[in-house]
Image (cartoon, rainbow, N blue to C red; front, side, top):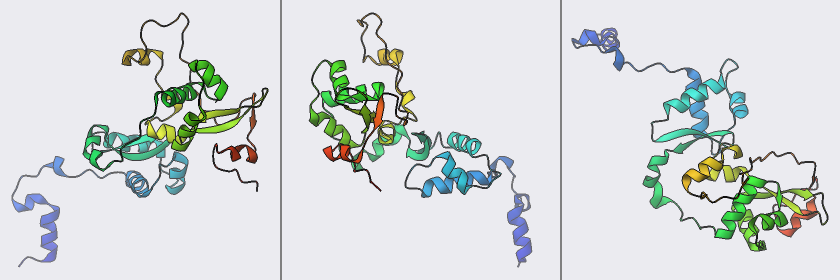
Length: 241
């Protein structure tokens, strides 16, 4: 009977078994930071930003470089590492979404009015209800904004420094996550919209698609919301503490 040491030698050195030894068959030793990132991202119920990841990683780790490499490794797998709203998470590969279709909840389709209103808010934020109506050319019902607020895709930002001090609206991280966007700047521009057929060739002279921005900082023409503003049902109550 072979000793344990001899058995270990056979396992460690395949040539001792009399077979061919394929160096390519030996698994590559992956950098430790990749394993750490995998563990953190798989264990988290929510996407994580680089600052949060870096706080849990060794000081010597280059988190961004490791994330880029991990993203490349998972690009051809059943799950992909993606960045959504500036945060990293694993998601089912887009081409395999059909596998989970039977388990997904049937989404409620937005009305045309809600879809148009959402698009206007996304591209023109911060924007008021009156400004939405001016762009659409029709009155915006309170119910349309309520539906979008309930989805969590838009939020009240502040109040316009104008007569009546109307509420301004903007998009949320939930909007970016649902549509798979890293940032609001990833929304399609004029050429992309034309390419998809959403815009025809009969556009008025000077027509342009605005460059969207969801900067969290209030602009000079906005005042911050007060706790009482949200009693209108426009969002969660702001703590007065």
